[in-house]
Length: 140
Length: 140
DNA sequence: GGTGTAAATGAGAACGTTTTTCATTTATAT
DNA sequence: ATATAAATGAAAAACGTTCTCATTTACACC
Image (cartoon, rainbow over all chains, first blue to last red; front, side, top):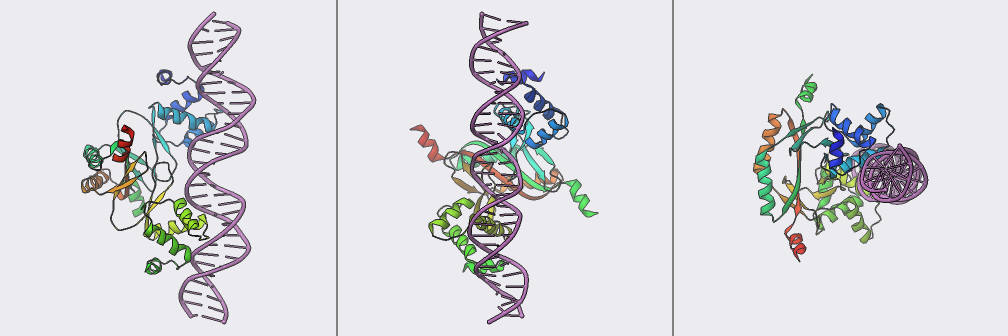
């Protein structure tokens, strides 16, 4: 029951919040922009404004229910938080997003921060490239 | 002589381009936003529009003269390209930007891309934290 | 089950950054 | 010197996102 997640996060259980959660959980694409979520809502005939979608997603982020990816200059995309820290690989052709975890890189980052006298709070790593499918499409 | 750099890049040698180059080369801060450059121009009594600054910086990027950093949700900043690939450490308090190179991370990224079937074209890594100075300020 | 209160919402305006438009100016090849 | 394509300035538009404010809603309490 998702209502519990909302209550635990100190958020009232409202239709917009339930719907946005539902969309994030059921979407075939794990990574969605606010606009994506909004369009999905329109398709479901839910009269929920874009501003509310932004608000809800931002609150979810604050509550640790979703993570926000700020990819390059593009608009932010959100993913359901599953507790696993991971980084991302992005296909520059089809915008597919894949995830990976690499403890070697994690460790090196901590070392670098320490070397430079930084108290690390966060990091973001994106690898850009052309995914296998798009490489093949290009050959033909 | 910077004019040569512009000509080599296939760009006409114009006052705005020379001035922007000059600012990037002489600025005490290596990382500048378009707005930063524009303000500097105003201080120099150069009547160059902000749109031109954006255009020039984007062309310089295309020509490989500068790199654009798209940090999180913030506005882009530019740095003179010196041929050395490097990543960045950012202080979330004072916005200081430091650079680092780490071959271990570079290598791991290549391996991960290969594992995932990606032809890597680029990557971006930002480590966020609190720099030494800001840690000390906080203690007092 | 009502009711009060603070929180949440919708609509549209506002925002900050960046890009575009278009008429005018400029650099450069000839 | 001149023609031509490229570059510019100013203002408007675009973009994703946040804010404002009047209205609605969820929920704690009776």
